[in-house]
Amino acid sequence: MFQNTKNIKPFEKKVWLSSPTMHGDEQKWVNDAFVKNWITTAGENINEVEKIVAERIGVKYAVALSCGTAALHLATKLAGEKLYGQTTPNGGTLQGHKVFCSDMTFDATINPVAYEDGEAVFIDTDPDTWNMCPKALEKAFEIYPEVKLVVVAHLYGIPGKIDEIRAICNRHGALIVEDAAESFGATYKGKETGGFGDFGAISFNGNKIITGSSGGMFLTNSKEDADKVRKWSTQSREAAPWYQHEEIGYNYRMSNIIAGIVRGQMNYLDEHIAQKRAIYERYKKGLEGLPVTMNPFDSANSVPNYWLSCMLINKEAMCRQVRSENEPMYISEKGKTCPTEILESLAKYNAEGRPIWKPMHMQPIYRMNPFVTANGNGRGQSNAYIDCGAAKDVGADIFARGLCLPSDNKMTPEQQDVIIEIVKRCFE
Ligand SMILES: Cc1ncc(COP(=O)(O)O)c(C=O)c1O
Image 1 (cartoon, helix red, strand yellow):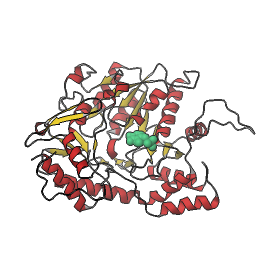
Image 2 (image 1 turned 90 degrees about the vertical axis):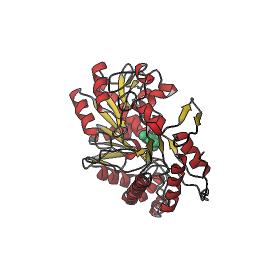
Image 3 (image 1 turned 90 degrees about the horizontal axis):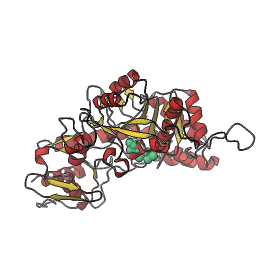
Image 4 (image 1 turned 135 degrees about the horizontal axis):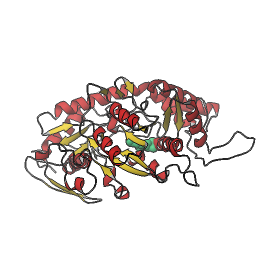
């Protein structure tokens, strides 16, 4: 904790990382579902949000599901089925197959590979965007030329280098599952994220840029694929007068109540993005002069949705910090700080920050999976060094030095000034 607490008081009301922002229209469509008694996984709200989201992203079909994880699961399953057919008796499609996956992401991106009995190979992170590194992906294809599926996420609302990734995948005949859960509304070369993959997914979870409390969408340009996912998501019922099942199914469809909330929120997507952008820019300006940088993006090609503002502390300004599996420790040092000290200070003043999402190759559950860095090293060699510039485990380095700042779109400029001041005092 910083020592000089003069003129800083804890926030009376908590400043959140990213909380839902309702406007009233949501209630209208929820009420509409009540009045019409469509309190189920079918109804006008669902049809409408599928139409609006598909139009917004620029894909032909969107299938409304219970969550982004369900969309990613069915996208991954569909890719597996196209590539390999069903490889296990219970319908798994990836048994015996490796899948290249973003390493710096939330585990929902890549768990579906395990649901389908496949093996995730983690691809290191690009320091320019904090997303999948195209060079590391290219290396991975050198090491495992047989791989035919890549699962790629856009972290914190910032588009990855999706054109380069697409070009590499095309050269190797690989399909892409694109996880745009955090980046709904962000564009790359003028095109919305979620529409680049062979299959895409977005999320309406409570902390996302717009929310339905939960919910997600599967995105595709193929009618056949949309129909298949819709069928899988409703227990794989066949067209018969009774419950007839020829393959494994899931109960993954979105509720018409949740669709009502999403329907109301859609009108405010651009407003939320503008608010988040203002927050990012205010942090950038307010933190000028400190030994830190913001989460970077390719400004020539991409427009983020600025979902979360993050910062990275320069190496020379880091005090000593260690993390066990469950606990952090640090030693305060004059003129230096670390994510743990800043997060502790924010919490003390009633503001919510977060550590950077811990990379997947560092997670106990995935520690035995292969990991490929841009210089071709994997585990062992790469974990011994944490050196961003030399492309040795970029993800571990960002996890060590980075943090997510409070990014709630209802935060006032005055509250943000206090947060900036707290960060500054950690460096004193
Ligand atoms: C990158 C990423 N992928 C997938 C998900 C899963 O979405 P959901 O919570 O809607 O299942 C989330 C968020 O929760 C996410 O942040």
